[in-house]
Length: 340
Picture 1: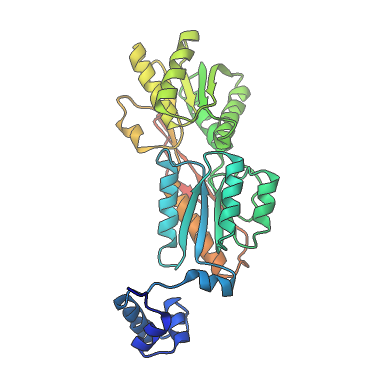
Picture 2 (picture 1 turned 90 degrees about the horizontal axis):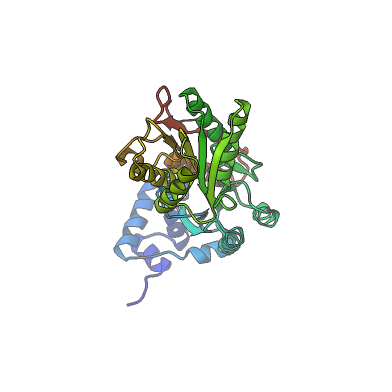
């Protein structure tokens, strides 16, 4: 079986090879009738184009490189789903790599992806080391940094302030009457957005003359099992807490199971608060508080920035799109998600 060529598709459609190429690439000056005829011929003949050959002439492919830190829970799959939906119909295709919250691995993934001449790159966060920042600055393509606003973006930026998210949750919990706070977290030296939420939370506690009565932080990645283990140890040391703030919902869910095992009423005696607003929160046997982040919407917004920047050949005005998470699970809170 031999692959059909572009020339054969052009002959089948009754057009020149150049016209067939332009039709398949969606160039605007090809009539819709001609484009339909070429696409029909290509489909019938099972023609697959050569994007690598195109990249040699344009110095760009239709690939959008995406680098995320994890796929271990629903957070980043939802972001990727938003990016995919936002790119739909653009002729661009997202390809992704996973850094495992490892800055050296992230840099090598970015370096490898840039060697494929993508038309844009989407990376997570604003805390890359200078060597990685230099790599991105010299890529000469649109760089979209997502999920975080607490820092200085290279180019385009879309996400939320994690420091502000921590502050807002602390204010809400204090307003609900809680005063004896504990903290349970994981991998804060790598998950810098979780560290920013904790710092924001502590700023508000200190402003109210409060602080964490006890903390348990482990360097392992977050999980329900780890949240349960650390909560059990913390409550053994300080049993009179009335609120525990967690680095995310996975850890908070483990905290709930620990309290249930210990016979502690949630939220009556201890209010448990996490971050992300995962679907599993609504299925837990007792209510917990969380900050619901608009993950899919952030991915879609990042894709729209890519589309606009690529169409304008990188001349688009640099832009930051701000989202605000929704606090749920605390009486009196729960405004709609929004972006500006």
